[in-house]
Length: 219
Image (cartoon, rainbow, N blue to C red):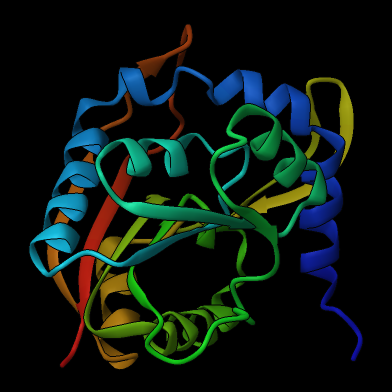
């Protein structure tokens, strides 16, 4: 089966900039207390329900997977980009990272207690979101928890350059209510929403508001 062009472009782009991106986001979480609070709430909910495997899809260099592990979760990471997976394995050799697509997770039904997509569904076109959320629903156990983070807006932003390297990368910005409707249609009930204004980070001001949605698979 021929791979969709957007997947090929996303993989190639992140392979191209893997080392630069890792350095760029290395201290990102330290500057984002509200996002840390959502990650902590997610971890607490998973542990309160007995724990179990948690997967970060689109894990990049693994810093969120590491954070989830440090919060007490049995966390592993998955990424489309072999270059990103190599960076994650190099920096976090005690954690498990694999290559793969969030649209076709190599997991049995109901295998996960939790799933995190941290600024990774932003690279899916609108018509692919329902399939991704259906896949998240499939691999989550009944009552399993989901945490999404994404940029808020109405228009996508396409980048052709990153740190002086050629890329072809589209960031799809979405409204929280739009994403919540799609999650509901997939059998995932939104339990909490965070939407914050752009903040300055690493000497720059973010271009858009940022959102997190915390959801749970219906029993």
